[in-house]
Image (cartoon, rainbow over all chains, first blue to last red; front, side, top):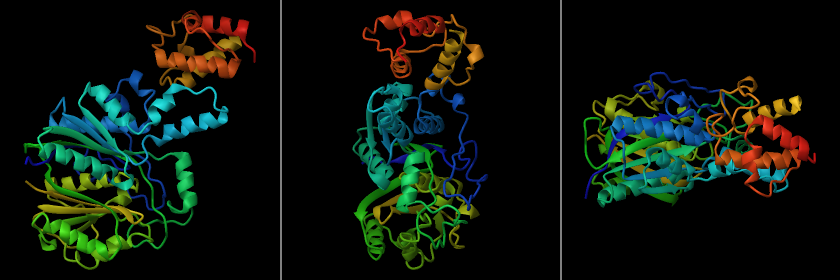
Length: 354
Length: 85
């Protein structure tokens, strides 16, 4: 079976994650419940004619995928696999609002074209003239991990040698207002909103596009090897540790072999117990990392987590701004990522220096 | 007619999201498609919907669009002659 290597990445997020080395220019906004994107100059990457109709998620994904491909020094790939929880929700809202406002008449094509979930993968393919395998996974908060798993299996089975994968989601006005009503996003005027040790319900919300080039060969620019991915729909807090131990065992590892664990803390006091339980018990002697205070929570925020993990391995450094505890290791070789959202969509991802 | 042409320029820039183009950049007789503003077939659909929604004009024969959407001048003349609202 072929191995899977991360050979390029690109990230558009609430932080300056392009034109930087690794989180050296971060800005922690503890008083905001929505983290705005640090947008690139789109016209440096996309023609003005094409850009005017593109949804936010499409533009960010094209830039992120361009950066990933450039780093991997590739012009063509064997597959494009995208994960998204909500798709290009901003244009979905525009299209649905137009249906209501105009009494189901006068529907225009542009926002409809942009409103579908698979428009991101489709427009990346159009730009690259890539007619290969192109699939979009829409699986809530394991959408990105589903894409990663699919890519890993395709490389293992030698159905592809190079694959572009990514996770993308958008903030949009109406959906945000619904999430606030439902209590999924923190309430206004109750700040600051620390992600660690939060005492309030709901999350600090965000958006972003993070893309990776996966290949079957280790190269000079390789970040890490993707050892394994596991997705579990529903777990109790007490089950997580056993599931992690079993996951590690299936990779002939144990907790003491892990050099850092990246946890998806999002500041929701109702569900952060899933992380806290292992933070304070089995992983207490392991360097612990969090990142959603930088990216915000969204269905594919875990792609930002993988961006963090890959960079820790490549730079052999954990920036202070993402450290949960003071434990350090001289060598960051094997990293475990654990993510869940509202108690479901649990995922374990294991990466390693190679 | 002059006011309508200014209105059309403003609506086209907004509806078609023509970034970096101002009303002053669009001349009345500039071609809308091809070498002029560079609009395409999806933009044509947006313009057909705009005629219907804002001026009550239903284009039943799409071939008519080629003449109507030549320029702001031709659009303005057609709307003036056919508008129902």
